[in-house]
Length: 113
Image (tube, rainbow, N blue to C red; front, side, top):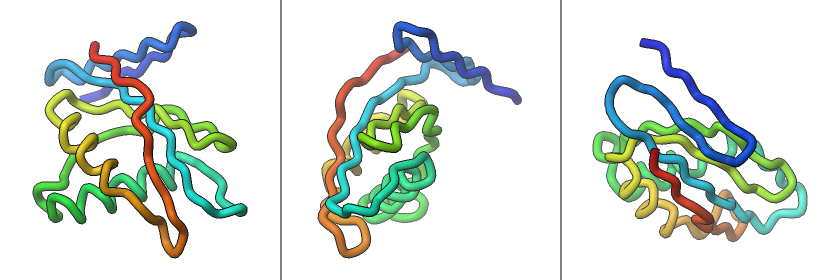
């Protein structure tokens, strides 16, 4: 099954997965490391690690896609199914480090389609 993702100029994000409604969530990853370069892989890695630590390998299986990431500010837009929103929001509250560096994630906006 193919999925179509569209990002319009006003920031609305929609995805037709054939499985129901999706949610876009804007987060800001802050890692206190001068040399960090924010990208989709880093955001994906940090969030998957937090989900696994909180819910385990099976329970932490939340499917999301990083559709945009600003390499300077660490602001990323995630697209996920509504049923995974609570898991992702719970997991980001526990992020306090990445490697040996203090880190945090701020939820900036949640948009349901």
